[in-house]
Length: 168
Length: 291
Image (cartoon, rainbow over all chains, first blue to last red; front, side):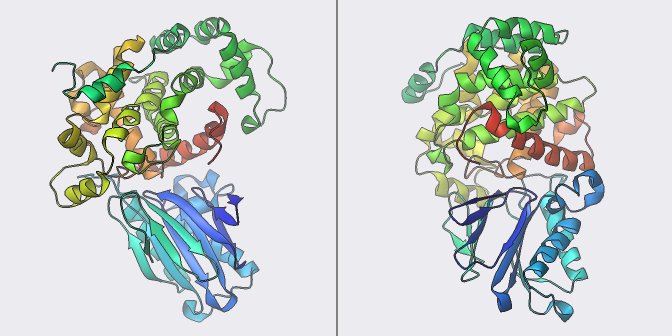
């Protein structure tokens, strides 16, 4: 991850959180990957993890260097980071607002390449274990998505070449 | 099929494609020989002072985190491998194409390079799992060159994105390359093939570039390689490295299973391995000034 003009840019498997009102979190061109965005309005904190795969069992060796690669290790890592910023996950997920974007697929009749769909399902399963669930999602389809989270407003903007920007 | 495009402006743009240095073509051909060894690559690289200097710069770059300085070309080549040496030579030769602003696709400067590098690595990883059926160095080179045609076609697709996306969504076109054929008469694969035809590269690479969106049309003996690049291209898109509006709007040919055996887990691991190798190579092969 790198920071450019107060924009934290998340690559595949990166996760970050911030409560600086002039900062933004951004991840470019999500294909089958899923961006899990967690907002904590009480502390005006936002976090995001760029998940590439459903489960860490496929490559446990990579968990240590990049827990964010996987839904089952990325979401706990993000929640842990947010806890250090004072974001408490209350009973049944109270206080956290979760949104999802990404999980696209190529045109594949056999669905073997539909890692996107499996990512979305795995992300939801992990969220449920914390009593969390997305209140909004923009997932699937055959297009890539760039996601920007503005810290001051919690506004999430999506963009894709050939489409007008939209919000989540 | 006649090797001509019924569009004089596109043909004129293709004809302006510069030739590559003889050393670069020789390097690609050496790697295409299944019996080649690193010494053969060293032999070619040694005769190119600029390439030798570049190889030593790359092998000692911070991205590889080496504890000692590598100061001989022999050692540098053995550490980097043939694929990366060829990649360096081609990156320099075709830089103007790789860094082209793909506005016709809604892409940005260097998107083509980033996507081609990811595809090169993915194609190589797939080849490495083919039990020797596919030459991994050749797969890397073919992956690196597969979308070169977009550098020219982009100029002829200005203002078409929204229309193409709507037509794909409504089922009028099967995918983006089909739309290119309908609108311009050819897809980027064919343009790329015509661009590199004069470069004296192996036929396998020409077929892979030409048919990476219709691999079944390649010569039967070359299909394993062409399918590797076909899959490598899609993996690059899935991992977020597309070239614009066409990203993810490409069809997978399920016939790949006849030539390449990969489980779901294999795909998953390749996806991560590509990302990690890409992060090492992206800034070392040439400076693109950004992520």
